[in-house]
Image (cartoon, rainbow, N blue to C red):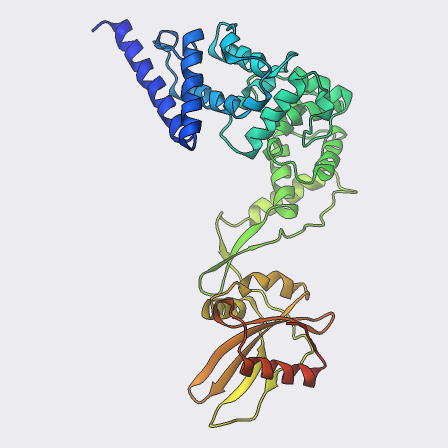
Length: 403
């Protein structure tokens, strides 16, 4: 077997595998047929998916991206401007040929090169947004009205339209933002290389950081990533902790109200270093959160046959985890509400010589002194004996019952 034939067969196997994977992920029978027809048409009109183009340099991942891109273009079929069968391929490299197809189907005007890769993204919301931006700009509409997660000035839009074709769209947005604010190319590359190329929540906060960095003197660019990581984990990152024996709980970041007003780059570098030195290994850590009593008294009824009805306030996260596990519901997720005094949780049960049997879990709003909910195991509605005890306790403590 000749070497060239071997290369072609290897390329063909990679193409076939890329097509097989795309068809398997395309959904129902109609979707698979539509994608198959599109692939056949593309193969008939171009060498984009022919072994001869890829022989000797076959890149399996690039082939998967191309076929994934065809499926994405098919998803915009309702917006196609021209028939697929009228496409005249242009470009030498595979990305250029694909770009000519995307322009043929969805654009009347040239689209910035950085947006071409939108069609190669893994399927999902972020990919769909980028593909929408491609179509928006291809129809002659402004970059500034595309709905980017960063509001672009005219200068930023100009920088974005000239961003290198090989970078991610998120990177290009951050890069253009820094350049548009007057930052050097080196600073723009440093900022866009951090998690800010994919984190756009809290844009006003991150814009204030960029202004601080623009005015910093003597800041080493290598310090920007540690600063961003420190600020993100303090202000935005949800944390997973373990309470009780093995209950995992997602809690708010340590300092959601963090502001950098009055800070300097030097002070942020120092804080980032201190945080990194104290940082625990990645993964859930064991935590116990405790809070003070609410001021509402607990309940203990008269003993009958050695047993008494009781209502006990739960005062730490371990108690909530144990209650949730025993009662098979999600009361453990109320930990932060209890810490912040937005809620109080109570356990209703029967106590006797053999111990305590949990019967219901109660939530009371401490600000309004209102019983807002009560539930038995698996979130079942309380039975009448439990309701009667809740009403008696509420009457004693001046609580309103709304459940």
